[in-house]
Length: 372
Ligand SMILES: *Cc1c(COP(=O)(O)O)cnc(C)c1O
Image: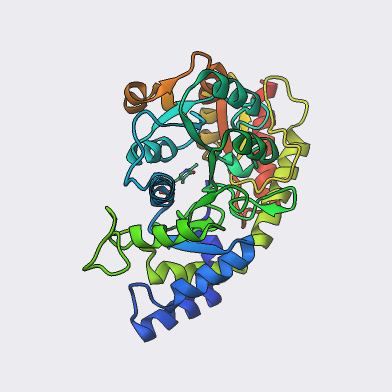
């Protein structure tokens, strides 16, 4: 799907230099690269604070825990407190809600963008009591309708936690994704648009209090580990991962532009084909994935595999169909679109170092498939 080796070769000099610096100073825990990265990312995103954490999942959990502590002066939310999100996302989005003590309520998606349907959020707010926040997920690198989401949040006094795991560098209306809501949670998992060499994540916020609590939570829950104030975690970002990220940050915009070029080739080559829906995005996308939809998914995936092309299904099971969430969430009746998407989506190869020729080859094999 994604050639990480090719990416490394492309940035090798910068990455190796950055890693050698770490080998020299040996400050593996909260070394100087962490602060440097946090400052650079805050400037890049246009936020006051960035806080490095150990993964995207922990970024979501710590954001929610910090919100609970700030809003209620309690360690956790309560089960009666409800957070709106999409069921068509990675497990971690819903899991983080449960780990913060709250209950997820799943709202169906918009079929054009696969993101949460803002009109359905409105319906959910009218029919559900005790909603405290919204977690929009910018799936596949595509921005959610942040204008609508922010105005609903304002009207109903809700927090907004953006799940930006798949959309580093993406924009909405001139603002970077992750800088618009109350908090943004990023992942640096190796396959993400900005990925490190293991697990990593980050919280972005303009809220001093949330940043301050977040910093405590990732270091056992206190400013001083022998005088803890909160139920914390050991969830620091590793110095060595920050070093990798510092080297790769210089390339991320160029890479996102390249992802758009690949997407344009697919758009052009695959348009107008019977039985195949292409992504239709009306705003700029950073194409973490290029995802098509077809009722013949299984056969298409097998056909591509036979020709040496690997594809992935993100996500085969919507959250409300998984046992954990079935038991512990509020499930609205109509989640049909998420179900259809889960049974029909297929993500094609896309990456910052994928060549035009490789992309044309994938497109030609897909065209062959739909011809027969
Ligand atoms: C990857 C991802 C996460 C979790 O990030 P990790 O770094 O793997 O913990 C959360 N939400 C979404 C939408 C993701 O794609």
